[in-house]
Image 1 (cartoon, rainbow, N blue to C red):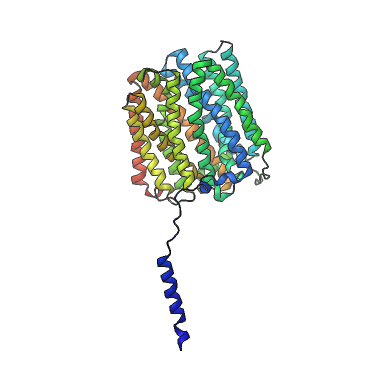
Image 2 (cartoon, rainbow, N blue to C red):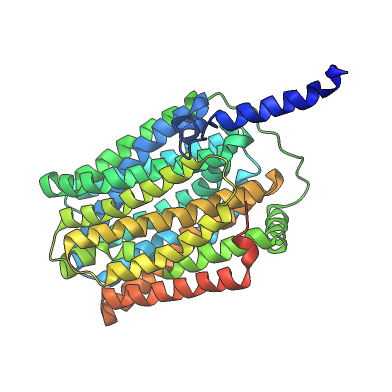
Length: 432
């Protein structure tokens, strides 16, 4: 009977069609995938408001560093300002993570952003009046650190309230894109503004820029935050969060990697004002270009991660960033010309962003929602609290042995630990 061969004929015809019909290639990068989180109204508000605010923040940071160097001519004082801004992280940030799990995060963010705005206007007023002294900047840096200690855990854990879980990784990558876009624009604009109008206008613009993110937060339509009834104290909640981190090998390893990099690998950014003047023979504008070049490399890295979408090699990217970053810092330390310095900082920025962005994404995708605020409080502490420790060490060491030797030594320690993680904890590279 002829019909018995029909299925075989159909399969043969189908195979023939498949062989002759070219398969549609799935693009590695696509705009829809790159900006997936922007389909959410709340995230669009956040992105626009936070981008404006971050440009102002980078303007203040760049201008403040150069003003301190002009007032003191001391790399050690640069490190001291960075250190004082980080002390509140040690005191308050873990508690800030507990608070972020206990109260509406939007409310907490409005409070912290308003506090930062007021501090920027105070610094601007002191500078306009010609009264600003180095100790004023140290005190204001400390108070800004207090606000940031409560802001950072809430900001990190707030992402999941603006987007659905499947777009969490993309939103984190776009947050980094936003941050690094500001690092490209803010320092360069700060350098020009500082040279033409003075530092006070940089601080004023920063204060005004906070209005954008505060308005964005107030315009959002956020679902009511669901929290379990708390019968334990804040101290018990904190201990519970720390035990959770120590018991999870993935989160524990990533936080350790970020911690070592923050202490020993990030001192180069603290020494930019000294590098611009002493090593490169430049001025405030040179300082701004160095910051912007690092930011441009980080922006490229952030956009790359956002464009990859739901990729399955996150651990490999984390390992790549942890190795490329310190190697690029060593390269930067050996170069004493502006053009090549800017090019090497592109690589530094790329490695930095791949490392820290993938660390953030992997921690947030592995943590349970119940512990999100506390875990992100600890994660934020490794950056916001340990980086100032590294800044103080780098500033003091640069006074003794010079900035190039200081950066090389820190990068070697960072590279050594990254190699140890790659060799001894291979599961990290296998994370998806």
